Image (cartoon, rainbow, N blue to C red):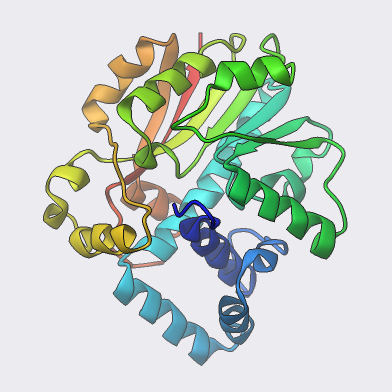
Length: 288
């Protein structure tokens, strides 16, 4: 990410959620997402309420980044459902690492009485706080913004400075982040997560390691990586799915589920036929 800008990919995810919100049959509603878009994307979102224009928009996105839109929408709903289940199973606080323009703290009713701590790069965090204050009204009282550069700063120090409570069962959401980090940064973050109480849940995304080694083995993979390089948001890290359970075990985390884009797309969008983005995966583990 460019040092003086917010994440462009965070804005694209907000764009996808805003488009979904405009559909008559939708997986979820996110009335806040549109506030994070630039003027061009806002206009496109408003126009998407017309079915013919919506079809053109969806086809254009799918041609440019095969599977990204349907994958992103299905993944949002999947993580929402995993988080709701974690809260119903006793989670007492939520921490969102690399929060981007995630609006779960304000759009999910079951989080209104639970502390939500969002941790992100200062550029994105400050921009998001201003959007909440200027266009939504205010930052909810149960929501706190903390700032960090994951590749340069220490989460333990951040936790000490802000008195994070490790004794509470916690749901940690880590969406769209691991693929931008170094191997050491990923490891140190899992060490940090492992310090939370038993029954804490970690919900995170990652990319299949093969996309970094042989991008042409996935539909649209080569072009996607080239486009990310152009906006200086290149991917640097991935897991092999078969190695994930043993990796998490090192941190006393048991893998509960690990789905690729095709699988969570089939679960939540069974009538959609889009292909692509199969390398993007979502996993949930529990601290034992």
